[in-house]
Length: 379
Ligand code: SF4
Ligand code: SF4
Image (cartoon, rainbow, N blue to C red; front, side):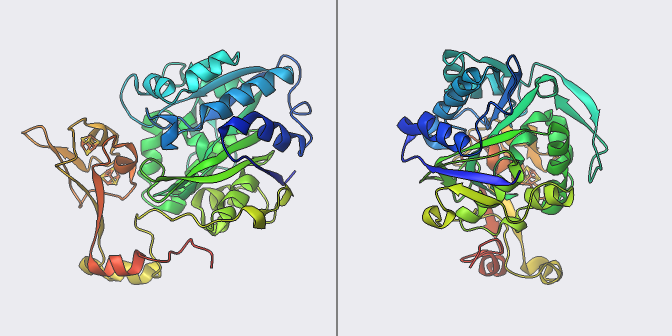
């Protein structure tokens, strides 16, 4: 089923009504959830940040879904693992985002993937990983539902329903995927995760989205919609198109389609796409309009690299702990620097820095080739 519903939701006071309508347009939850089913709801709980920063799925979206799952006869369980490689990071993110309290009040169990364990499973038709460790609550659930946030992303341009399941991996596996070092390969790794999780549904928080330097340091934008679909790939295609990106150039969508998921032309029901279309600013990462053969041969004239702003850095060490190729180095005085020779431009340090202290530097030529329009922007 490749239908995607769009319902306007001007602010979070209308969340439950909008979600209920979006689900109804697709036939409701009752044909997916059997009475007594354990339903794992997977919001985006990337980091410990307040709901108004638009980094995490809004707690009202999580609470509404818990209530609707209960009404459909299911038992809601809300779970995720934060992006920072530090004990207690997920617990802090669950609390600060308001998700833990909202989910509990709505009658759900809350689980922390950091502490619930992982099981090694085979990946069907693998693209990058033949086996993966996946969080136990995801494997144990009867039904899995993605609750992503509509955001831009420096590595994957856009992050949505498919990429949301990257959070079901233990952090060491996430680092391995980042070590693949290329956007398309990373997208294929996420598609491998998606093919194991096999979600039944997705409901996207597009009420306040994030443009610019997402997924953590972009600008909140009032995009005013809830999107839903039984097919996460189709939802991502419609959402990316809605914010002005070329959906088929999103690496996670391309990876999932390579594995046979999704459909290039999903059917939109409810509010029509053209009525809610807008243009999100893409991230300022290394998105280039130049063909790759050209940028490869420009050598030192074409450089994009992250640099730590020492005035903003609080020496928390998150970038150091999460850099897969160990490009972040700790100096004797306790400060940190990035070794550009080792950096694979995965942008994790930028994504996870709580002080927005990691800046992207570009040579003049790189600035010229990456500014204004971008490869992913639809004309
Ligand atoms: S320094 Fe930052 S962008 Fe470079 S590899 Fe490490 S985490 Fe990724
Ligand atoms: S750059 Fe950011 S993540 Fe790295 S140590 Fe400084 S404050 Fe922490």
